[in-house]
Length: 435
Length: 160
Image 1 (tube, chains in turn red, cyan):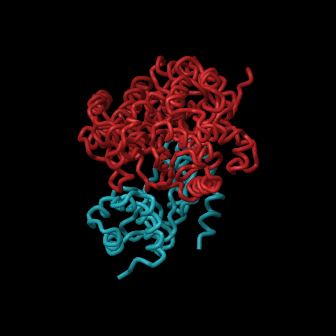
Image 2: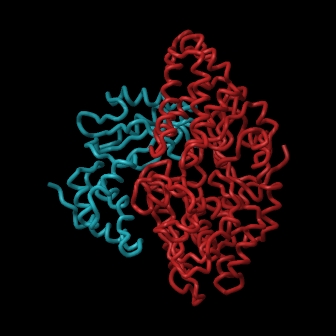
């Protein structure tokens, strides 16, 4: 295996004992970019152009080019503008934002500062999921305090005429709040129900004011881009996928963990880096980007590189970079039912196709597992999924549909076997009906 | 009737400072966390009403939030909150067996509290973003990763 450079961007302080402190961050070139901005060396336009040129794309799952998103903000409009960081990490399989918050919070703070400056926002919120309240939240807040103490945040920072107040907001458990307009609703103290778009947040966001929402990893990648240049970042990755990505590798894997690697790393190399499939078992399937993206059979993903284009071409998606590995003993029907349950539980209930459809999917899959399924259910499952997809306000409906479509496409025989054998899984070693 | 403590009010005041004037509705989630914590893990109608009154907002706005987010309990629950993640990454690493083990050990099903009011076994928990440490559970906001049955027994045994 060729050697793959690790921890080049957001994880670059991780080698230090206390990777999260201000001193450590400084030693790694931290706040150099912000210092330059505070000295007036970089205009907002230059920052946006640099981020555009870096090829950075939103790491929250959608992969939208970050610099382009920033350029949508009406920067010169004389109204309050907001920057919001989305640390509501809750896509199943994904756990790298937690790493950034716990182990390198200053990279996020500097990234938020640079982003806010580029878009003319003077108030920024970091929306962190409620379950992170014991460790990641205090770690992040301590770093914010350090940043204020070192006069890197506040009013007229170091006489630069730049203002930025940065606050933490702690959520309370709702996957849907990772959807950017639901997150804004939640920040306003409401139920996290996505807004109909347009208008987009850049025009009508938090409290009706221009707002941009970026993911934790996207923002924490920005300081290194400004510090080292767009080209440096872009060249780490591959065409259409600049820089590094944080892969949360979980499931049947020898060394689960968060790996920050260049975009375009081959799946084979990633697997090898993680020690291979748990216990040397045979690989069956991989969900490459969090539970919402289509599942991939082993033979397909083994030929892929981990970047936007390659995974899309192979019928899946980069998503959040959460790689869920499943070995040959995995019952795909049960996995799909667990995924279906998740979307049923997390549907906000606004749109009928999603609210009702996710429940139908879960209950039909349960029926199959309990031995009451019929073959026509398999067609029905896909039909329901197709009727949810594209017919809802937000992407949760699509996210509920894709797993069903892809599991049935690639592992139809497992579902068929279970229906024909009254709930017995194709992988079960005994005759027990396992529920 | 319970009343908002002075401490809770001070903390809510600090929260409100983070938001623009007249946007105190944004403080509901934070305020509910504060009062739920003080009330050993659950909210009562009285507490929600008082939060609404203190923030000068309609009570319905507080109820809406309290019933939407999974971290808020609007019925009495045991004082220790045990939430076992059963989502895919944890499921692949044995979460279902862990749930069985804990249910047997505590003598309650998920979504129930033990009779002595000590432990609330949260209804099926969704992904808590610690997938690389699967299987995992959260006990009173603390993450416990790479669980084994022995580890779980010790964690639960240490609860007072």
